[in-house]
Length: 395
Ligand SMILES: Cc1ncc(COP(=O)(O)O)c(C=O)c1O
Image (cartoon, rainbow, N blue to C red; front, side, top):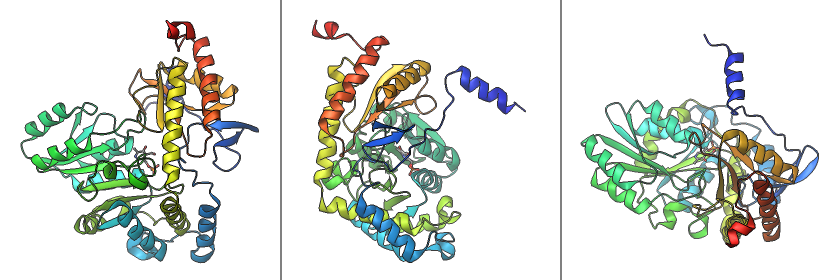
């Protein structure tokens, strides 16, 4: 048996030990960290709903009316009106027959993939899919074919090789660490040609892109066509929990077959009510999505203007590639000293040698503070030899 202390030391030696940072107040565009206000550039609270007064009130009222917890799994005695109301609103919002709530996006992905792909079948998964998709593939006991990032030819080759055993193609809609988009139209065409389902994880797409923030599937005009859409309530919708949207029959199947749904306590009613309130706010104020997109463009432009390698993203997620894990964390700490909080991302979240600072814009940021933050990052990055100097840029 390997000693835990040894393994911990190994993580330290490789610059991969992680530690918690304590936020001393609600999640806003600026947060208190170590008694100091810093600009928050690594939250998924994209639309500012986690700290929105109406969303907070909805959670508080639901807790008073329905209690702190659901008390049991949905299939025992934990299915309550807030769950039903949110499921029908989510199905309508996404343009699907049915929706089903899960405890988190992690549970929704693992449970859905494992339920939809069985032994002797093949799941096709993009190389840069989120860890919860990777783990869902492992749990499914199906064979997994990992295709190169957004590489349709590689995927098509894998599908041909599988010879009809393909069960599912699964992809992030917006890739969580790079901010680029999956080629959904082409993926759906391949899925149809080879008799597979297509499943899209909208964790970073819902509330951020598409008409009224409906996500990447709606942006591609494929609502109701993509077989399974997964999303989280924990990011743009400001709450906690997750959902799967699909045809009524698929959802009926998941109710009996998705193990994290069957064997885990139902979402607290307050979380469901908060997400429902966020959906209503989104419906009433779609300009928040435009504001987020404008801020994302400002942030991307300002970082590039500083000579930083921050290109490739099309969304509010903007990676700044550093490569080495320890240098990434040094950059993170030094930028934080200047009042900008962007988290360093290291393996296994990203592939070896591709550590990065991952910036995320929010609709609640001001354009000027994003520009000032980029200047601070640029200054530190130049000191560390990560960014090109302005002279080189002008040349
Ligand atoms: C692409 C993606 N899918 C799923 C998840 C998991 O969602 P949740 O935080 O609700 O577990 C995340 C983030 O955590 C994610 O980035």
